[in-house]
Image 1 (spheres, helix red, strand yellow):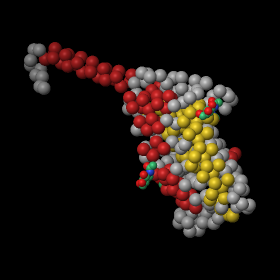
Image 2 (image 1 turned 90 degrees about the vertical axis):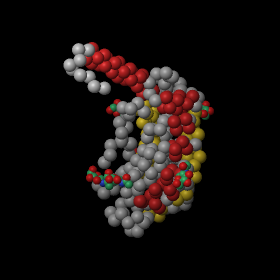
Image 3 (image 1 turned 90 degrees about the horizontal axis):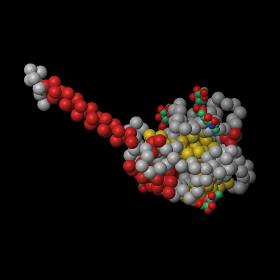
Image 4 (image 1 turned 45 degrees about the vertical axis):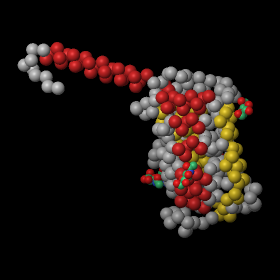
Length: 284
Ligand SMILES: *[C@@H]1O[C@H](CO)[C@@H](O)[C@H](O)[C@H]1NC(C)=O
Ligand SMILES: *[C@@H]1O[C@H](CO)[C@@H](O)[C@H](O)[C@H]1NC(C)=O
Ligand SMILES: *[C@@H]1O[C@H](CO)[C@@H](O)[C@H](O)[C@H]1NC(C)=O
Ligand SMILES: *[C@@H]1O[C@H](CO)[C@@H](O)[C@H](O)[C@H]1NC(C)=O
Ligand SMILES: *[C@@H]1O[C@H](CO)[C@@H](O)[C@H](O)[C@H]1NC(C)=O
């Protein structure tokens, strides 16, 4: 459209278009800031509806029709898509827990890349398989709950994972060898479960690991040696320390920046970084 300044009506036309576009813009801003994406809201409400007990009201702000980006534990991108779900039970409050399984409806959250269900004590059921439909997933912290069953072999498909913590659950069976495909892992904590069998040798390939804990399980075999400085050549040059005792032997297992600490601390005393709220694990 061409508006000629010589046209005596053009100031009115300009004014008209100015108001028209202002109203359009305001309208679209209001619409996008009123609610989060409908799929995200539906997925989160599905998660909430599978929770059978929430005595301290951890999910009390999760109300249909309100902007799910403002619900407790939710982080959104600017585009109003949910990227992380962070719920943590308070240790000093006995009723700060959630019961029930992790609903697969979370698979509707197509931009979700972090799931933090920490110290909720009574989240149960198997490993949340819906994560395999979100191949870009980066952070899994489902610790101090009651998840059970095996850690699926498909865990190796989540090749973008930075952190995997399933500590203090009731997982049983072996550690899948596919875990060695998670080459971007910086933290791996499977401590405090009922895992059995050997530690997959390929774990030595995870060069970016800074925190590694398998303590308080019933693993057997040898401890992978991370301290070898020539560790770049995968299996070659690896030394293994034989575990004393038999497959029922319980042992601490650690790796906390071996190159700088001459006496490594057992991992059970190493704390996770404080990821409270919405901050991301810092990249090194
Ligand atoms: C924990 O979860 C289980 C299974 O969902 C349920 O039977 C049990 O009552 C829950 N415990 C509490 C304290 O809510
Ligand atoms: C994992 O990847 C393999 C190979 O691409 C595929 O066959 C399998 O279905 C995947 N598993 C899941 C649970 O997506
Ligand atoms: C390991 O960390 C380095 C430095 O942060 C990074 O450049 C590299 O891509 C990481 N490796 C993998 C496989 O993610
Ligand atoms: C160990 O820590 C030092 C100093 O904090 C750092 O420069 C180095 O990159 C770390 N090494 C590993 C393998 O994390
Ligand atoms: C984590 O950091 C927040 C803010 O810095 C603080 O309020 C909270 O007490 C910390 N939590 C733990 C477990 O250290």
